[in-house]
Amino acid sequence: MPNSRSRSVEYAGAGIQFAATFLVMGLFGWWLDGKLGTEPWLMIAGILLGATGAFVSLVKRVPPARRRPPRDAPNDPASPPHDPPRPPSSRDPRA
Image 1 (spheres, rainbow, N blue to C red):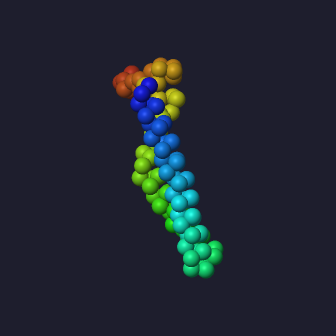
Image 2 (image 1 turned 45 degrees about the vertical axis):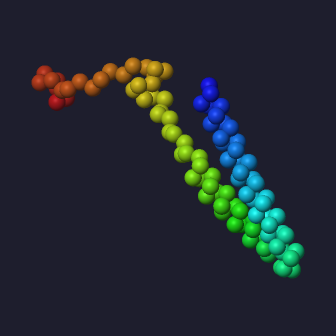
């Protein structure tokens, strides 16, 4: 299935981008800490900022999962056929 394969590649790319965002922002914070002498605070801030950006990007990029109908749904071919409800007749003692 080409559609399934392209979707898998897209999700793999999203995962790589997710990890790279953490790494790049953490390294940038580490580098900035070395220049400003504020170790480890800017690295921690960079990782947190990268995590926030990565999560937001991932949520926007990946669609929500579709819910599957229950197995006993009427249109499920694996479920046994159900009798449709009958309207009460005038001779029915329960009516």
